[in-house]
Image (cartoon, rainbow, N blue to C red; front, side):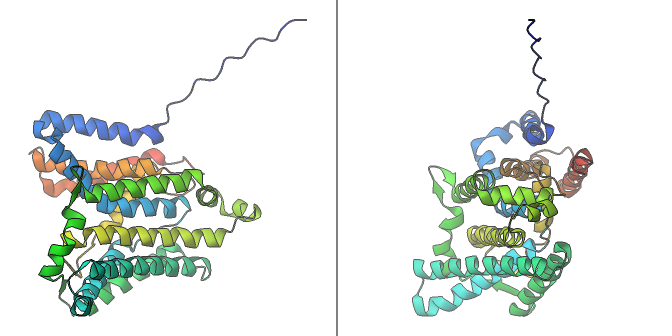
Length: 329
């Protein structure tokens, strides 16, 4: 009796979608160092990640929404309205509570409640109202921005100087030499990765994005999971706003313009399929840092005008979308 020949194991194919963003970031870092040695300085690198943190935190929430097959175009306007409301709340409660940590805690609580509520509204309109996510969030984008303009009476809502001094360390403070926004960004990224890859909720999100119909046949609570993804997105927007209110210092009708595009671009650059079904939190983090790195290199060098930062980012986004075509039928 002859022994059947052992079949060789198929060679593993290089997963460009998994490692492409990281390779691109490393290439950018090498190029930035060659063009200007100060690029690799610790201060500059931490500045890049700190500046990335705001969009990065929002993009982590957007990763869940996009993997599930949805989209949220309102995050920039949502962040602006939450920031304006938090500032109004802080300025109002300080008269009774005083300039102290309790006043700051009240403002942070208001932000988180608003973010969760906005996400819940989005999710219910999409699932129970059977309205396309694009239409829902495009509509709420206008609602949020108009509401902010109304609250500001067409002007700007500014944080009081005393409150600004007390609140400042949330953004400008450091732990072990690392800016606080980076710690928050890393914490949200780690939690996001655990939720997406190690929980039933994360598996359900990916299953819904792959095939909503099959997910329903598999007894997955599709509507509930979709609602939760938008709630998670709203909470991420609120967290980012809480961290960045000290830097913003004010909010007006132009605050947040383009932030939703930056967040979505970071998700797509990071390898998440725009049609849903697959994605990685790590990729989103790398995508967000990559975008900020482009702007930083343009500021440090004179290759092209830094006014073309958006154009360069747009070219990269289109190129990634081109490479993703046909990846999911």
